[in-house]
Length: 358
Image 1 (cartoon, helix red, strand yellow):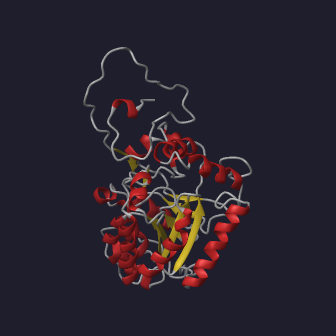
Image 2 (cartoon, helix red, strand yellow):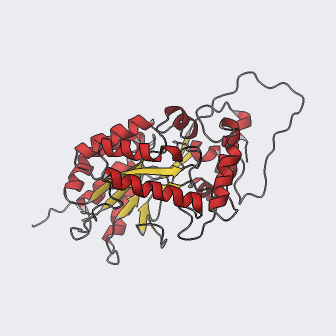
Image 3 (cartoon, helix red, strand yellow):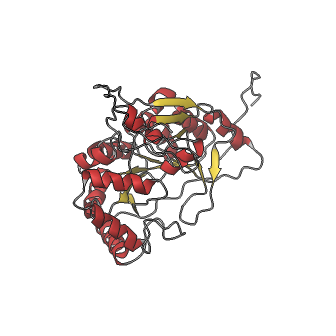
């Protein structure tokens, strides 16, 4: 596995390394051979590969999630959030969950056509599809590929309900589709705001829109009649959790009517990446943050058990949960949105050259 951080200048990235994934048999380690290095290394650029999917709807049975199916137009995410729980999925591709996750992306341009085919199946039973639950569908490369927009066009024509989670301001491009779907009770959007501190956001979410830009997104989407959720996720103990009430208030003032929160999760390769990031940017509180997380997971850095992995356990987790409960009550925010409609669904028609008789 190449150490990208040794061969390139790494600018505007959150991950500080590119260690091999857990399935790789070999690792490459940089050693000083005594020769002088080049003074100027090339900048690490984003690369995009193409995947032809056989299926795009992924099903889950998690009792922690309010949906049972999702779509991911892209693998990897250029937003590069250091805490992203989806990073370990890049290891299945033989790539690093570190810098590879945010620089070696995979687009699935045939996803809209495959989606339409799956929705036409006689065995398909309609239920809301979640998009953005793994990697962001409105990351920068969506501007070029427009996979998400074409998926929305398929869902809109089929009257299929969809729930979207994003940080990407590119969602404003699709207000025309989402506004129309929302008017039919078919669309809802959640916007993740981790902090209101622009400097902190730039350090841990280097290529995502700034916090104030996300609040502007909420305002514009809400004005179009789209149901909005402010997502205070993830909350990092002793770093961002003091902002919980301020984030919820800002989201409510921008137009959000629902709210949720999740505690920081550190599955597999995410833990060393976040610990390295803390040691680099917040050495004065790194140990305190990790101690809080261990307290919430029975002494471990992460516990993947159902009903505990999203928020943890113990006094600190309970305190944050109580603060959230009091804040949403005071602000008049709901914890769940209006159920999306499934009764309008009609399977996509097969496009042919023959005109319809009706």
